[in-house]
Amino acid sequence: MESHRINTPAVEAAVAQLIRALGDDPNREGLAETPARAAKMFAEMFAGIALSNDEIADLHGATFLDPGTEMIIIKDINCFSFCEHHFALMYNMRAHVAYIPRGRVIGLSKVARIVDLVCKRFQLQERIGADVAYILEKVLQTDDVMIVIEGEHSCMTARGIRAQGAATRTNTTRGRFATRAELFQAVVGQL
Image (cartoon, rainbow, N blue to C red; front, side, top):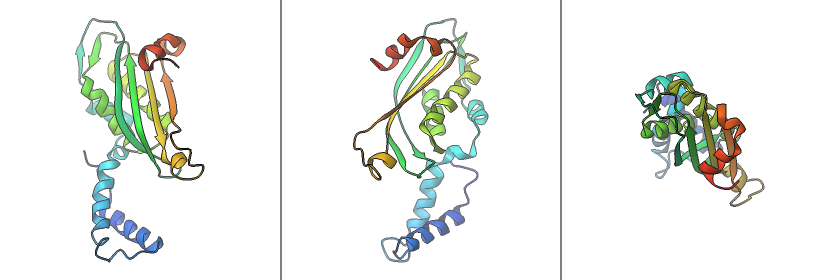
């Protein structure tokens, strides 16, 4: 999905200027097409910027009637995003999503698509969980939602302190998940 808001010529000019500012020549053979390639890459990597959480919920609202009330868990959704503080990559990320349905379930691939679009913005890891939870609450009409995200941040591992292997885990809990720690263990194992 491509962003509707990207200004491709402006992004290309900005990338060329960045190359110059870093001390290289954007017209040299190896870099001559880089601004155009980077603009195309940014359109893909930041497609979520153009969509609000409500718009994502509307796009991915395909739900199905299901009388079940047992917890549904989707583990190990691979994702990445960019830290809004340093524009640094958040990588080796896995999102774990759990919800308790109230008469409706959502297609499993839709959950992964929601996570993907939410990550395609400048983000904070904590906000990714809150955004995904909001969308699922809206789509499923349940407040029993939990999002656990684990990931590494290159603003910590590749620069500054360079704490290789340091990972961050965030938990976003709503409804019954907010008070039942044993449900965390069912999703991600021991805390």
